[in-house]
Image 1 (cartoon, rainbow, N blue to C red):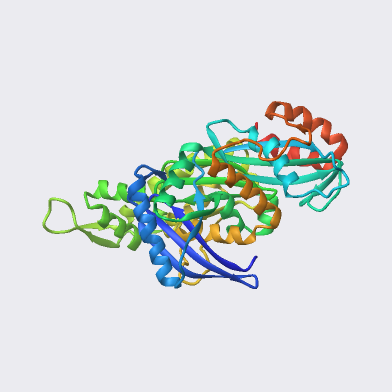
Image 2: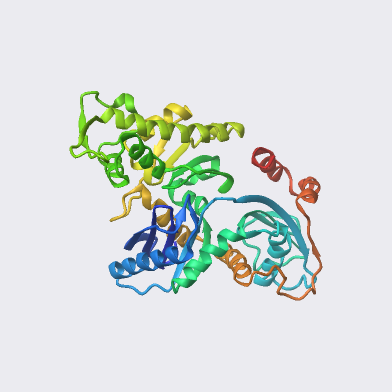
Length: 439
């Protein structure tokens, strides 16, 4: 990890979190935390820019006070709602073959083969590079400094609706901060939550937030599948409130204090007193009954996710399931998830001083991901970010080098012809997951 201080912003349905972390000699330490109740979001989406902006300001101020640092720029998480995963490939012809490939060449091939391959209503957030090729030599991670006549790229574009990006940008700007980077949340989470082998061989991530639950599949270090279910921990609280006729705050306290996600594991002789609307005296309720309410909602969420995962056979991935997010703190949720998914489930809890709660996973993963970026990925991220800032897809460099661009349907033919040049390594990669997740 690169030494430095990083500040992240996680805009969630129930709370807005800011993490300030310092990386020194490969170790990351959280030195400041801010958390403010969300008032301008619904189901993970911004519905009130002013309210959200005010909450961001308050959360940042808290993190500044605790860290003793002034925050000017933020690494901002982008929710997976509406994410489109688009494979891309193409090449540019380098006319000045005696000159080394530089940043401008990389930018040109990325712009012409990846950034211009997305629908006009989408904004490119990230380009995940599988490999570069220089004159047919493959498996190159960073082509800069090499000499060649032809520069190719194989990768995957992550794009989201422009409205989502605009609203997030507007809220951050109104709060008085600049954006250092924009990162799709499941992409960042994988870097923190999963091991090297789990990212390589394939693992499912489930993030149960307040207003929505995001399931994603990671394979070959890349995001291959995402689905967002518009239910989360907040729905569990509302169910308790509605069934028991108690306030939302009481319901939240019950969920946290006596809640259990697997009702069969709760003793039937344990009771709790609950304040009920319209009654002077509290009523006595079995804790097992509260657990039944919690289990019913979580079971519904997991069943929907299982149906989505079964369609792409993702539950057969070797890494099985990693569960995190605020609702992952409910006792018994791992056992319930294993009962439904019928595979091993592990609950991830961040292991950083002061934030050892699964509700902070997203915020921590953003700073962790940014610290792990290598030079070529930083360059590519800045190319995407500069396009977002200018809202323009025009190529910024001269057209002195010829460019060949392929749309997604043309790419299918191009991949076949490229296989002959590249050998079986790329063929195996294509067969393994492009065929599964992009059908």
